[in-house]
Image (tube, rainbow, N blue to C red; front, side, top):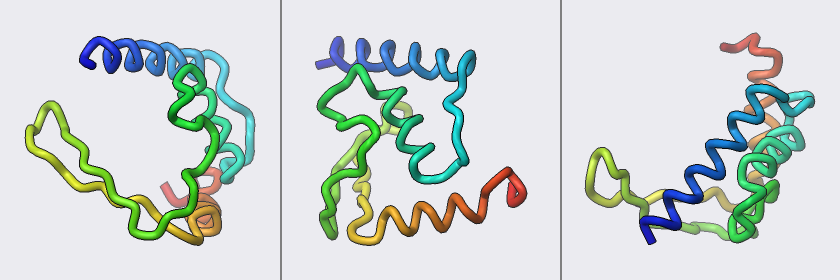
Length: 98
């Protein structure tokens, strides 16, 4: 398992490096975010790169953080995700809010 995670880390790190050289063009909207996600995770089919997870209310996963130890429960947003992402990205558009 550790080797698989290491290999996935290398694959995604390489894709992020590619984005530094050739950023994904877009309007910083939901479609743009999905394309960035698709590019980074394209080598990991099980992650459905470029797609939101199937809508599930109260979807939770337990994750561990190597540098902090322990387990943390992460909640995934249910219905209305795409509209909410569009709203937040609209507020941040062009970096005006940053």
